[in-house]
Length: 318
Image (cartoon, rainbow, N blue to C red; front, side, top):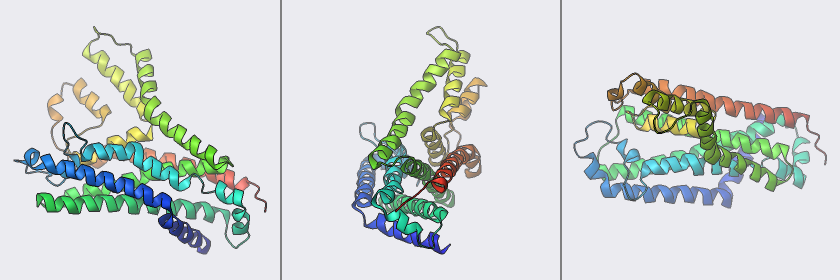
């Protein structure tokens, strides 16, 4: 435990004093302020007459011509959180191994598992502090704009949104740490992590469409049931992408009337389209996003398990 906390404090101090963290935090912070300004231009008009979940509209109101806060949150899912996770872990192991500091670190009374745990834990805490700061800043500025305090359910939804975002960032952090163990070159570790990110974001939807069209072909004369089956296959394939899992979870938590694509297809297939706008309670929303959260945590655990197995067997020389 002592070795774990030593590595944790050292890595956390390095993260907050590095230009890497300062630049990433500035990017997210400035992006949040810009979208908050855009929301301020049209928020009062869209929320006039709204009596339920008024404060959550601060995070979901959008402008037809400019990106709003909901688009910014999607941008976080697509770009910022993966980049932050990758940036915090791509040189976690191989940099110290190449410079010779890893052998000196392990010559101290510090176990190898404490090294990985300390680096991973410090990265997760850094992501948590960064995202919590952004959400609190947006909430404070928005509170002065709309003058409506958040209700208990809205606060709980934002807390769960933060929790899922932190687990999502932990997945990318675990992936980058895994590649930092497998590849000795830092550049190779970065490129491998970015390649996975590009594949999951750009190519995974294409692969889902190809698989769906191969299993359930559609054309202009296809019936509604065939189209829904095609979308169902696409939804099933996309469940293997943590990017899609996170996007669905965020939309359900921040938009109480939203459903996942799979549930929407089921409702439409049963002729219950009128149920879609009905707001869900927090408990019902959590039941929907629970499988997404479990999947993200499971993928992160698998990455860490592989990292442990490789790092424990690796020979480290001075």
